[in-house]
Image (cartoon, rainbow, N blue to C red):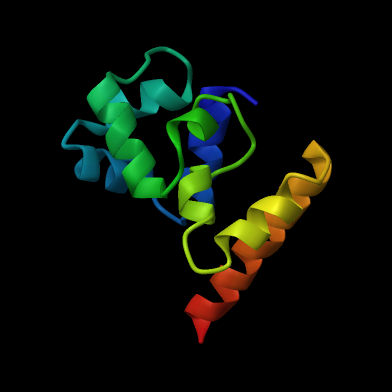
Length: 112
């Protein structure tokens, strides 16, 4: 998936308008719109801000991985060694399923 598609999907999933994102980035809405329509690419600083806004890694946003969060964020906590052992035994497809499920658990927890 292309950067522009991921950016659009993240914004829509977050139920935010282009105007709202452009305000967070301190740019004008037409400038932001160009990112979603592949007419322009964000600066490194803007890319970093987008990652913060959507809580994703730059690798995900740029299409280098399908894993939204950096691995070190996923592995924080006391169960890290056991988790890493299990995680390393999974296929790439199963890794994505596991991550999707964990993100679902987090969203459910946040709703409570």
